[in-house]
Length: 136
Image 1 (cartoon, rainbow, N blue to C red):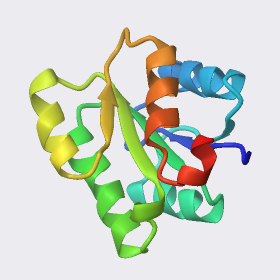
Image 2: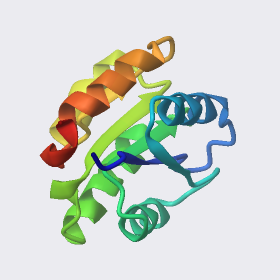
Image 3: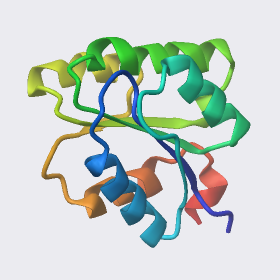
Image 4: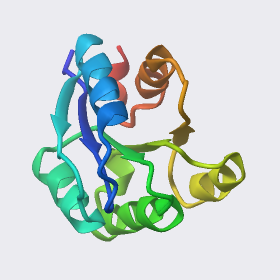
């Protein structure tokens, strides 16, 4: 079975990456291959990294409050590149509950807020990965 490849990205000007590093480590410990982009990535940089690394999942962590703009922008760019249908796109961080339905409508599969156990994220990825050959 092919290893699940996950891009963990920090879009925007957010300078805090503890949560992203925690989830990256948890995904790696769960047997996934993790590519971490580092801080302050533009949506364009995230999409290019996702395509170049041929990832199965784009996981974005955001605390800056720009989630309603940045997360859908990544989905929009993935669609423009023809890559969205092959990738699961998820987000996490400090995102108000009332913003989550609109983000899901715009193509973010799930939003994980602070305090979500990493096992919940791992299980969601395994259950919803778009490359079904990896769900064996």
